[in-house]
Amino acid sequence: MFSSDKTIDSLADLFKEVKEYFLLQKEYVTLDLVEKLTILISAISLGFVLMCIALLVLFYLSFTLIYLIAPIVGGPTAAFAIMTAILAGIGYYLYYNREKLIIKPITKGVASILLSDDEPADVIPEEESHEKE
Image 1 (cartoon, rainbow, N blue to C red):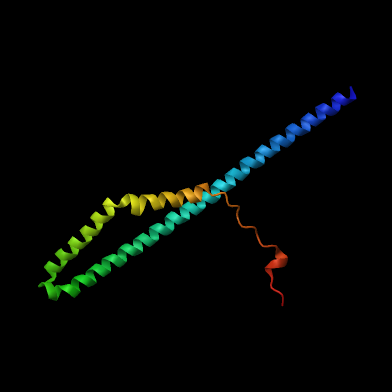
Image 2 (cartoon, rainbow, N blue to C red; image 1 turned 90 degrees about the vertical axis):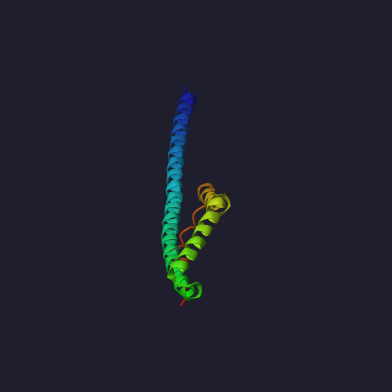
């Protein structure tokens, strides 16, 4: 009878440990998901900011080229038409190569963020964080 009480206590302890293990695993998965979503959202935000800057640069660069070629082609109207054709050609090229230039790199980047099994960098212990004086 005494051994059955020990068995019941052991099973209760085992059940409690398994329950705690699954709760810790749930917390780990949640923290891992939060970390990956944070990286993904910051990458999207950075991409948006860089895209806006690139569009502004392209806008000003196109006006610079328009005013540079205006005397050569006979006026600003022809220069604007040439720049429009150039930008339409770039747009056409990007549209028809969107799989290779846009979709695949984004897919690889998102997959590498979401599917990475890398452990987060450990915090430097306080003893090592100070340089010897």
